[in-house]
Image (cartoon, rainbow, N blue to C red; front, side, top):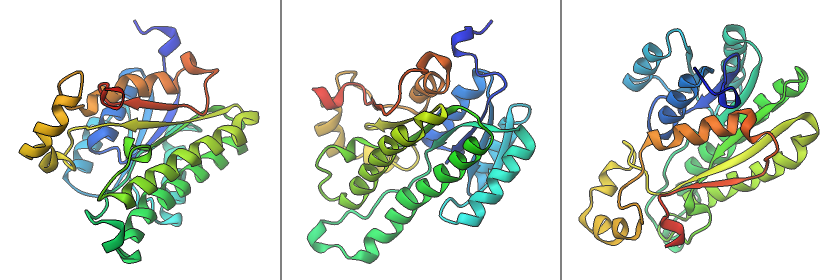
Length: 253
């Protein structure tokens, strides 16, 4: 029997980038708490697997968050299948080029900014408009990163894009509070996913980073299941504008 405080039954929640990595951990946590989940992602084997796993718990929707029309179509499909949306994790994102600012060009930055900033904005704007129109309270969450707050040498494009996400969520928290809509960002630390697997297997990273994590392990997508449920539940009903760090203690050590 679920704890009523964390019971998400009857709630439709969008998770972008839901087919893999942190997004998949969020999807699994939400469905376990009873939510109906729409996992938005690009086509591929991971998407096909998500589609199978969501049978009876929601739907998988093909969506390129960089395309405004694609986002609108995905949201329409979600509402048609699951009913009014009461929550969204704008989680889809990409890494940036490993270049110093002095040696990078605007062409290096544009793909990162288009996905991580513009794609996040398009997603959250569409969902917020839908929630306001339907007078539906709930929660919006953007996936930022510790790179938004730390000096991301060699990854300035990525760090800047995630800093923008964090600022966006704070602005939304203030703007949307009168509508009963909360907004937060989550800041992952060193998380083991398909996107980071090569880097985290590097001996230099293991030697220089892993020893600085008090919990002495990399994070995993499943570590985001609990925070996802908490932020979408009534347990966090008087919190908004938060930046929730999930890093095993790395940032304080």
